[in-house]
Amino acid sequence: MKIAMLSSISWRTPPRAYGPWELVTSLLTEALAARGVDVTLFATLDSATAGTLAGVVPRGYSEDRTLDAKVWEALHIAHCFERSGEFDLIHNQADFMPLIFSEMVNTPIVTPIHGFSSPRILPVYQRYADRGHYVSISDADRAAGLPYAATIHHGIPVEEFPFHPLGSDDLLFFGRIHPDKGAGEAIRAARAAGRRLVMCGLVQDEAYHAREVEPYLDGSQVGYRGVVGGGERLAALGQARGLLHLIGFDEPFGLSVIEAMACGTPVIAHARGSMPELIDHGVTGFLVDSFEEAVAAIDRLDEIDRAACRRSVEERFSVGRMADDYIALYRRILA
Image 1 (spheres, rainbow, N blue to C red):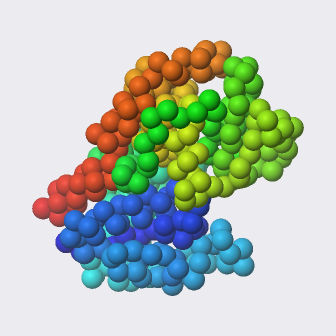
Image 2: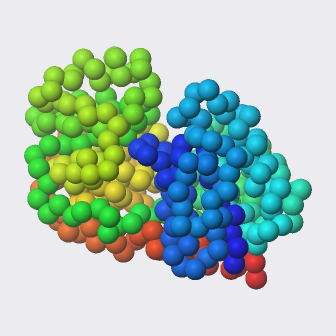
């Protein structure tokens, strides 16, 4: 089986720090290669893979602002589809744009939909619905009227996330500093509960950061570490009393949720979007419907068995399970 894995090119694959789409693409690519699949990764030229690397884009356009995103995305996607005859299947991780090439080639295409950035992109998915073999990354993130070949949850290499049986007294916010991601609500909840909050993530909305986050960064009750990677990232995820994931929209998935649980850290999240599929209420964290419930849940974190958080990820969200699910889908399509 020869697979063309078409990555996003906003960041390197795998990303050096931030880059969730590129991270998932890399994890799947390496797991497929480890299972003997002949996989070619179409990504930025500074990417790394155990498979075969192919590309035309020197660096991610979010890392090099001299690159025009539209120009290099067009060249990147065209490069993959020009070689489509070399592969049994194209796995499109690069959103809706590659779908416009789908009727120009005979090679089947699998397209995981990593969430809908806007309802305005739906016409593309509707137009090529008979070619895309769409995969939802959670049951909650299915658009009405679109056909789906499967729901396949993301997976992570659980063995790379050290288990922390004790954690600490600190709470954690881990995500982009953006109105949708609940940074301000996490600060307010931690302050209401009288707990220290450690914040890690990319500032994506400067005005929001200046208004909702910066005034509370006293270095004592609320601390901000910026974008963290490597050992610092793993330590942040594992050494927390709990992850405050108070997202303000229906999130398609939550990588930081399963990463935290893999380290033994329970999660408090609003009961919306994919969260009920990831969090077992009262077992691996708490699903809440209001700010007041979130504050109350902070005081209940000691009720959670951190080993149960780890087991849940091992059993349900391993990268091996993700790879096996995709291989099964490939075989159904190619049969």
